[in-house]
Length: 303
Ligand code: 3HC
Image 1: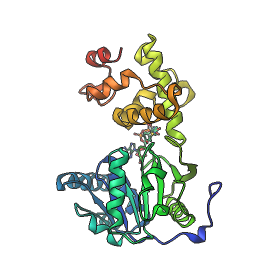
Image 2 (image 1 turned 90 degrees about the vertical axis):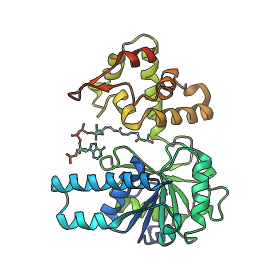
Image 3 (image 1 turned 60 degrees about the vertical axis):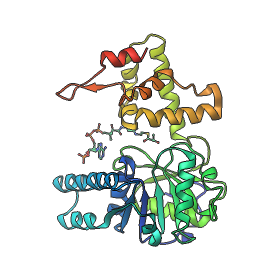
């Protein structure tokens, strides 16, 4: 089913090569997904070769897992290994018709990436951003072709969750949007077309949920009780397990963006700030057997 407000699908341009800027966990998940579903060459890049190699290592590891589970054939695994390549040279994106960035969540960093990409790609190449909360319109504002910028916001784990927020910036044109929706369909994602607002739709709701769970702890509810109280509602993960999956730094960034935009409707939790400052991976550590527990250090931070 096409999302409400979708443009004419005949405007979509073909995509025969994809670029992913970044080689972190999100970028690597995207590289595998695009190669697997579109079966086109996918290039990842990062600031240095070590990060690129780490990204490629993740992709190869996931291909091996898919093969071991018989989700893909040995032939497909070989094709995927050949399709995903890495570089530190952005000029390698010259032939791409769809490039998505998944770099650090900082407006100026993302603007810089797009400005540099414009020097190498054709004017029709779609520039997509996987930002969690930043303005797609602002990201495009200084470009020669702002109409080719679109938000393409995935959810973790990318391979499993079907949702994709496709964000229309103020200047995004119909051909860009049609191409983005065509790509979403090829990726077998359920695209929802959302307008450019801080944290779009889903992260606003999740941040509100996280904020309330955190305040319950602030007010004296034990961590484990606050975290598991919603379990009977059938959520696939408890709120603090989700925080761990997303990463406290990303969650804090989204909360700060929302606080800047909407004030007290979105409080920035001092506990979340403390977790990030202490570089903790989340609320839970793991015993040698892999069982999650809250360490005394975390409990002391999270007061
Ligand atoms: N990468 C790839 N595959 C993964 C994975 C990962 N990180 N994590 C789990 N999977 C796969 C497993 O391999 C398994 O596949 P299989 O059926 O082929 O074996 C399948 O997912 C199910 O995994 P499990 O059986 O281990 O566990 P669950 O059934 O509990 O599912 C879950 C795990 C899919 C993570 C589920 O708990 C879930 O949906 N959680 C909610 C996640 C969520 O809400 N994400 C949104 C975060 S917000 C966000 O990302 C936005 C950003 O901007 C902040």
